[in-house]
Image (cartoon, rainbow, N blue to C red; front, side, top):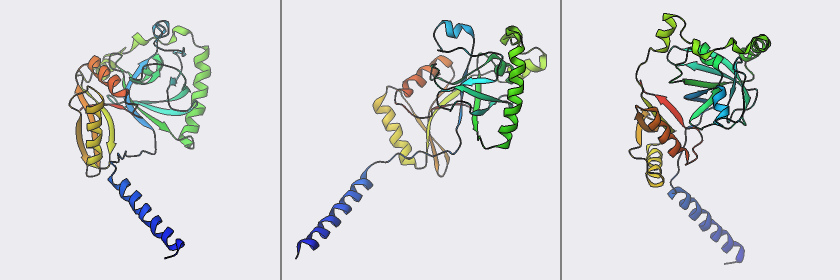
Length: 254
């Protein structure tokens, strides 16, 4: 047998061995999403937050602007209040502002007012809108026009305590009178991958009772909760956030 043939045989055995080794490894497969979206609590801006150093930058409370940690500056997002389905288009003004990871973004008092958010439970759905969308182009034009008007308005033009001026508005805000939320860790294509994630949580944290919920034949969701208290919800969120998951979500249980 010449050296060339011997080299070929050794190479084949090596490649087969590597392939077998990779097959034996446990893989965790996340379900991918084309468009960024996240549900969770928004931090409604006020001066006290800046004074207490809970946020590192000021924002104009009359504007339709938000701070977000991962979306690009000048991106447009659609923010929805899931209780009353009211929506608004806002622009990301910065992604370099520091605030608690428990909140998915910082919104202005004006946005909270427009959506009739309950300030004790400012839960929102946030979706990134494609920059190529003609819808965004139209909204951007409207946004800039409104921005010019807002800049001329007095600072006291937006008052957060004016939420619920009418009985109908109060009904919209207080429609849901119970607190029940879960933390979504991730969605997986395979049940075994979801089980691997549960094992990791149990091994690396002191969190108890992570759950797997079967959404469909090809979607298995790992969850914590539900929680009936915002303090316990935030504590568990901060614990699981130490594992550096990319996109934790807080989901409202209905």
